[in-house]
Length: 291
Ligand code: SAM
Image (cartoon, rainbow, N blue to C red; front, side, top):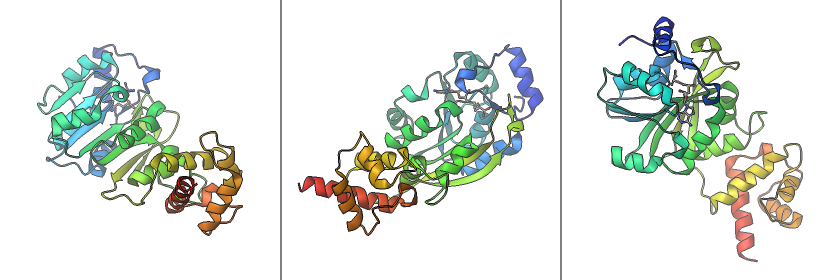
């Protein structure tokens, strides 16, 4: 089968099937073999691996995954791409394509049935309109995962890997780092895609923590706290938490919890580490329980 990392071959396939790009599905297909190799290397794929690809498009990255992994399942929402994938992946017997919306698939059952519940790798050049929901769904549903290696918008990759004090630090950084260790493997310019996106992109690998890095008593409360802290970035943490309609703490309760953690009542959320947010959440949790 023709190498789709070569733009000429991609154009030939698109013409053969008279494919029309669907903007609503975030379709920007890769046309650069260096980038494809980088993704596969960053994901550390071996012949032992079961890989889930989200959004295979015309199968460009899928071909590389089939070459390197034991088994690949690719979930593609656009039914117009299914006959194309049958064609471009016809050389491989280790791939299954599912015509589904990945957000509606029961991935835990899929991993159970196809990989005996053992951790899988997820690889994708993600549709940018739903990057965060897809990544958070993988984490929050506790899918058994080794790592998730994805192409995302450059700014999103920067936000995922930044720490306290950086302008990029926020709820997404903390949510991602709670579950995984981020590593940006490459920045990728628009000319590596067809059609060219308006934004720069990056390949980021998220390696799941084997053991939790913090011990939280109430995970939902921790994330409500984090969201409230960054909802009103310019306000102090006390005001951010007090104004949140997801939380129900008085100003006094919040100030007391901050003091007990050795933090100033004028502090802003953007300087707190994940450990500090966790300690604060645990403190507020204990206080409410003991009331
Ligand atoms: N992997 C291909 C590549 O690198 O050339 C295509 C990547 S393109 C950025 C994103 C792909 O995800 C498209 O094929 C699009 O149709 C598909 N997609 C968009 N939303 C999806 C969803 N909710 N579930 C599954 N696939 C989706």
